[in-house]
Image: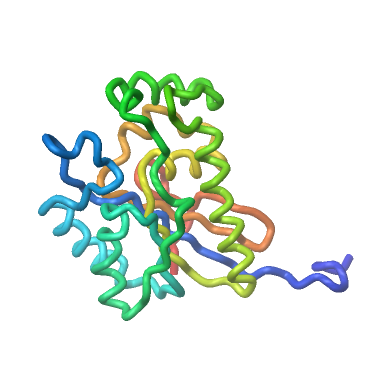
Length: 207
């Protein structure tokens, strides 16, 4: 049997390095400006360390959520590699209202047991997951010959991406995710799989 079928081109291997942003500022004055929160001093140091950690990996491109904390997390990496950062709105954090954020841990836990639960004025888990997976579809289509890209996003969104391929990812996994955190996805030309990262046993080294 021929593979791929005549007229179809086999896709090359695409590696995606998912990065949860480093520590952002919190506290007075930021409660109603979540979208604008930048990295803290500790977060900026962690972003520089992350750039060094990823030194062994050849990179094709860097993508990021437009929110400052995600963008700033990969800026040192981009500067180190001489790469531009492409902003993708669908990588933004899950949309929440001020009313929902006041009791967000309870809303979030309920969202993990019911992906269609809609906190007041907020996005459901399923809606956030679908737009995040659209990003993976976009990247797969954009790099048919393969490559390795870094994608900087947010904890809830990344957890939902991982859950799409590893159903055991749950509320406790999400709550245990560090700042920053790194996860490896691979598309082997047929489908996506999680290769490893914080909370997973590495399935294979990313060369």
